[in-house]
Length: 125
Image (cartoon, rainbow, N blue to C red; front, side, top):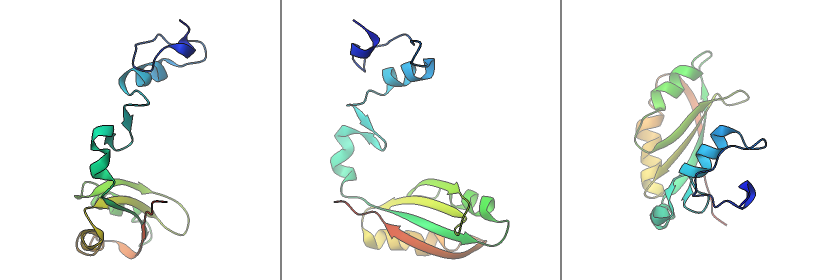
């Protein structure tokens, strides 16, 4: 059986075209068994969550402080300092639109150093 035909769930040694880290990842995280937010068994629950990106403008030089202040808040999936017209991008999730709004208004916007936020809900086609 070649490396190309080896099932994703079996342990495989790295090949010349596959780095060692990829061999480990394909063993631990099979393509059909997971996705970026958990197992397929929990996917039905996740379909009911509302997700959004929050684009944040900060005071000059405060992007890292703001990102650190938001990271770890309940509902926050990821926080990244970026360049461009916005300084921080946050990915959040909540049970519904009202809970999402409450999270933005009561938890994110009060963080010291934020000048302006723009919340962009994720839509499903």
